[in-house]
Image 1 (spheres, rainbow, N blue to C red):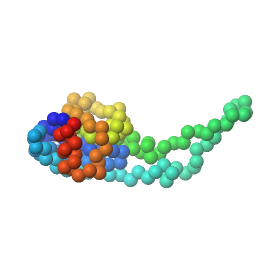
Image 2: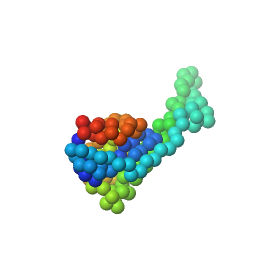
Image 3: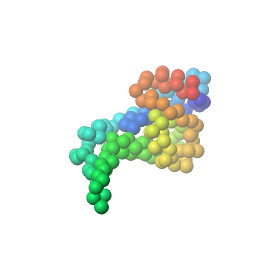
Image 4: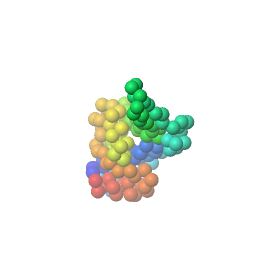
Length: 146
């Protein structure tokens, strides 16, 4: 993947985001941390107060359980939407010209729903991998090999 000088790379998942800037060039990238953010997102069982309910047919008889709310996933989706919004704010301030996003497929899909036109215009590439816990050298290597 092309990684031009001064590109911004967002490495994110449902609870962490890391903004990097390429101070190197396409041949020898040098990603430097600009901002890191992490939020707590406990499992649904630790966020919910009740078990899922049950519903019955108006004619009686068949009962089924109501699908439980996945609070953990809702929070991850909100975090992805917030990351997309942050990218919009930075794009509107002309803070970057080229953007690469690295995120797991589910997070990347949620972010795409919220891309602003200015973010889409600056998007140079996406990599659907979870690299949030990896060293920067591994992120550079993954981007070069993509």
